[in-house]
Image: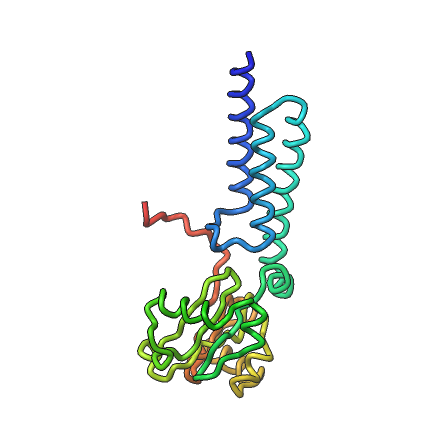
Length: 220
């Protein structure tokens, strides 16, 4: 009976974890936000308590379910609000650009020069002369813009995300909101249809979205 009970509670915990994973979305560890990481640890610990069974089965089930729902709600809020996404998931931070290190940004992400150079080497960059820009992404990974990959060594600047106009980014590249709206009008694209818009070497590139679900699975 004890073995049968353990089998049943283990199966139930695995089923609950499966549906919670489907609810919150599949993410690799490197893509997790801080809350995803905390929720993942707690859910895993609670699921282990569920598998053991006994008096802790019901409380552990409730805790697992609540954390799963909380993770889903946080993900939903971040998807709907750009400000919430920046607050909860963080923002990319420029560490190095055009020969200049941003010391405060490096301190912000707690990266010293030794770790910076290690990141450079492990990503195949053995000379800073070959690098135009280094960015710490919100998921903790470091991205490199190589001069060889872009002769001008310029970043693609996001000027719209999820239909929101990023006025500060426009100002940084000497563009105005009027210019952006005029360019969108030329392309016959409405503001609220824009998923992402970037400016590269002075040109605007717009990536709209569709509400339709793509059902053709080309990768099976």
